[in-house]
Image (cartoon, rainbow, N blue to C red):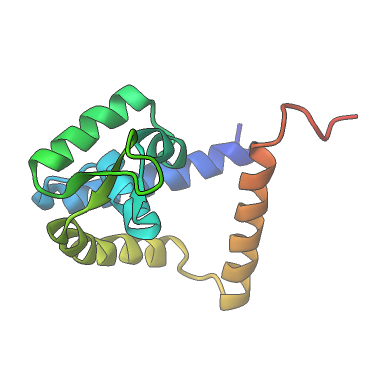
Length: 145
């Protein structure tokens, strides 16, 4: 098991998310909601389906999260500029402020996780993780002859 790369990746992600969620507890934000806030901060406005794809959650679960964030005043619904039949979700001013309060928690955890890695190692790790993410979305076993 310890020769299995995913074993280490799973530990890094799971333990980091646990620590981030614990630090966000006073704000009432759990990891899935944080991922929604984070992606909306970057992309501005997305449909439920688009958010679900980005944050790796099922539409039904994401709909519940979006509803609770909307009730808390963190997100709001808006008609799509391109097609009024679609509803998109965007951060409110309160949501943007919450992001600003939460991002230092995430940055501290990332810094702790990457402690001891040089700037060059961090850059290479970022490149490798991006490549691995891209590879993950290829058809199954695409590279196996």
